[in-house]
Length: 516
Ligand code: XMP
Image 1: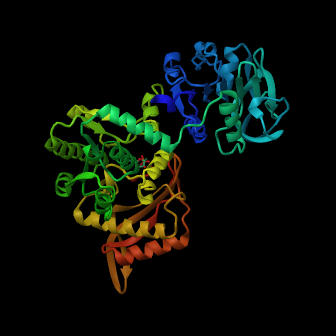
Image 2: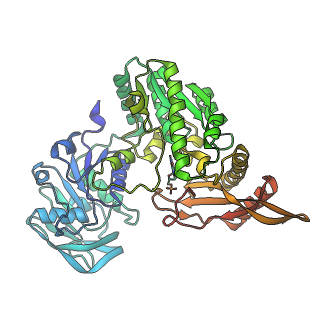
């Protein structure tokens, strides 16, 4: 059953911002790849019988007092190794070579020339454009290693011990700025490690269905549906595996976007034929949020009420043992990365707390997948494109976009403005790919305007559209002026009580994507 994962690539994370990208690149070749902390034990690293290791880059300098080192056991495992940037330096240091600070930091594009024949550069041109990002460099490779390529500032831009299958590259083959990077990784994965390409959405689905059936047997499974892509794909997968034993609960917090609850119900009840219990808790949420303006207080109230409503519905079903969640691989890696405890800027509520409160056993069928893989699996399961390509929407919903007092009227105003913005973006084909998240925000201030011959004194809408890969940093989207003009005109004309529209041109940092 676990054969999809055997013969995989184990990636040791030395803290590079690109570590997850390495895993994605390997998986794009049809080979499973898993990320481990650099100091994971060999037993853990080898649980899926990898065919080779990749050592990621990292921010340290190898001679610093607490610099992360190569686990000595790795060298005894008798498997191919590819060290990237810091990974190459860690490999060099562990094997007795020397690393030194270079006079010149190499950052950005570089041209490397490779002379020696090696399986790593098989079928690649003699000169390659690569992406460099390093201060230190290899001064003397370890014994047994040949120089394979050089750049103007790195005499050992690539090195290899061909016999043992150990390689190092100073540049980053995983980033798009290294155009031949995928070919080089392919050489490592297939020529050097001998992996077989068997990781595909279809194979994943087949495996996941068997795993779900084995875990839950004939019992029923509960799933909180939000309409977001992760819970949707988890739902479709579970439905394929256990049919009517899947019980979905969809809570309308009253903080959803225009027509959102109808759409979610339509897709899952009518198109996917899934059991969906619907609880419209709008009034309850509105009551408890009355006069609450502090963002963290809003989040806490919504998180608590959501758990209450969900638990009530779950208890009505009686005897539910399993709770499914759409946890995906980046969440798993992040919670495992012990050393890099990220600072909490905002407390994010999803359905965290539910398993503890109700004593559920978790079913997490997507915990091995990256977001792009979740989408491919969703497609292969036949979910509609508009669900698969949905932009993310925060758990607290419009509550954190309706600044100040939350009332039904203000939410309706916001919903209407937001729907106009989204409609125009969709019309201009700017919702998928070109932007990552687009929405309207209602401010708690009034502005003076003039309409016809009358002075107006009404509320202000902010339009927010960002581009980002990971939502940790983001830039504001350079939307066409014409589109912004049309959206502004339509909002002021069509949404009663709004007389001014602004566009947010703040990047993250220093701003955040949401306004609260
Ligand atoms: P920020 O505003 O922190 O948002 O730049 C980053 C991403 O997280 C989403 N977000 C949330 N998601 N619960 C969620 O489930 C929350 O409380 C929450 N706050 C922000 C935000 O929409 C963006 O995608």
